[in-house]
Length: 291
Image (cartoon, rainbow, N blue to C red; front, side, top):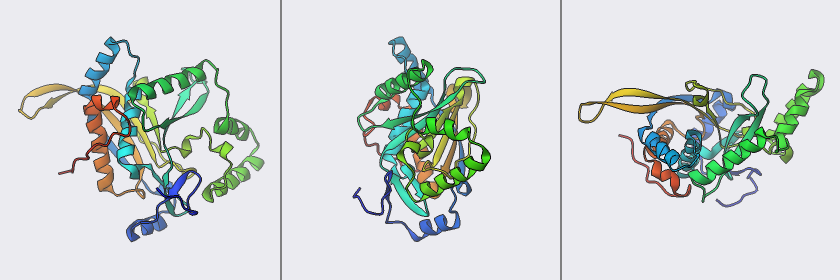
């Protein structure tokens, strides 16, 4: 994508918008007024079999790592999912970055740290798994110093209301006009492509989570616990399959419903063909038409 003086430091300005797209942004200038919710149970039987094989081979890859990789491949092939609206203009992120929150330890009082995972063209399930494991290990072993947004939040959160509230208002204004200091954007999940949460790890089902007006993140996805279901297959026979529920929240201003539905079908297709996770993120995948 060619650079333009209209670009932000974190995104390229989209200039070939339709009139409908621009009017929708004008009618719904706030992200929190524009979110749409999708609940989808995806068949992941083949992924379960694949993960069992990896475990037998001694590879410590988790379902969360697999989902991050599948989501990265989906966004790479469906680039509109990497767009965001700011100051009534449409932009596309310069990078694909997936974020999540990691707890330092598993207890109620444990501190939470924002983690950003940059998705590179040459990545696959193994490189992404290694990056995430190393990052989380650093956090839990307290080898990683707090910096960027994680550090700023600690400082700002302790200020009295009379100082903190006006400051937050100034930060939101600077964010809107692309003058927010990079130190407040670094390691800030609200400036990623999408935020994800693995609720299945705590034996919880997927939920819907609201978006925020601050930042440039226009998607939030939760994955629930893997469950067994009895289904009727194409031959009319009963079959036991593995399913995982996903709670998906997206900003409807970045793409129409048809585009989003095809994107979710692609995500499910990748999860149903887990060998795709071993190829490069940049691998082009032919998107099937919905019928």
